[in-house]
Image (tube, rainbow, N blue to C red; front, side):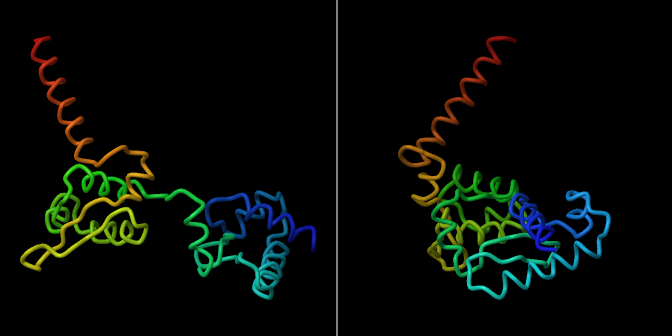
Length: 176
């Protein structure tokens, strides 16, 4: 059983997504799924009985992860990972900053609120109340510039992109 637990631990350590017992058994080429499940439960108990930084989460399958109380360390050492939809929202913010939250919602839909919260949590954007207090003004932070290795502010980036767009229009007219 100890060897099976070690093999399961190796699978959990290596994977980036939660796996079902059946998927783990298949990876290990173990036909006895109940045996894998029993070893998994023992492994979960092993992790929960010690005061280490790791735990096995079993909410949507099984995955080895850092405990919540140590996530601040992980965020300092690992790059920020963003889902594509959140990254698109961040791109709109960077190109149009400062942008009103209501305008962003119109451009990106109601899921923009979820994206905004995630970006705030990761300190990639900041938000302040606008003059009338009905919405927020959103802009990127220094952490955003550092993460994407941008020199200067994003307004310079916007000017470069606009100049490139104008060049493309002129080139298209010349080739017609």
